[in-house]
Image (cartoon, rainbow, N blue to C red; front, side, top):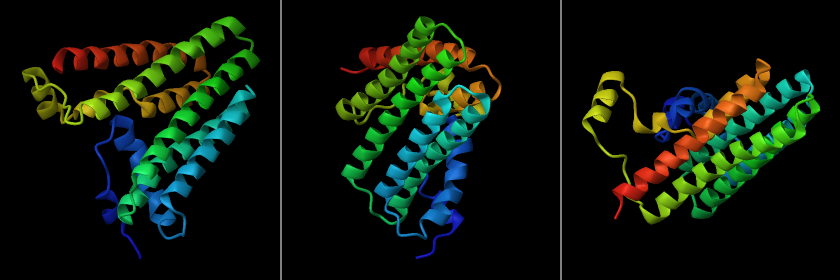
Length: 228
């Protein structure tokens, strides 16, 4: 069955900022071609993981050209991670197992990516202990964000961001959605990519360590004080 770009766009979910304006737009065109193949959504998820792992291997070398190639491969993996869900929704073959597998593969690539970045820093002459410590802080923030969000979905399935007068003014005036303020995987991938390209990887990780930990703590406190 042939699908149009407009039909694919109708399957889009409420994405985060970079997800909506970068990854989802590119994923739409990836999906346009992938949905014509016999690849299943789970196979696309696995393909996404393969690209991420190969990209991480290039990143770990620490040489600039290899790291740039690694970033490209990792970003392709991220785009495919958006495509698998689109394909599942288009074909109406979404399953709980597929969703679980998608989350599992995502967690694997997140952890492997940070480990690769740590190796890249040490291979570039950065202090070993400082690199591992910074990498751990970023990894902790990323995993805690995933953990807090996933647990909120399980225990508070109807959870919505608190509607306040200020939030409503921001959304109506700037046309921003609550999820645009999320510090999710899209933010980590974009900042790491920019850090590699502009040789500011250490600075990017410091920023992610601060923003990432502030974010998951804020989400935790919000849920704790607004849920019964």
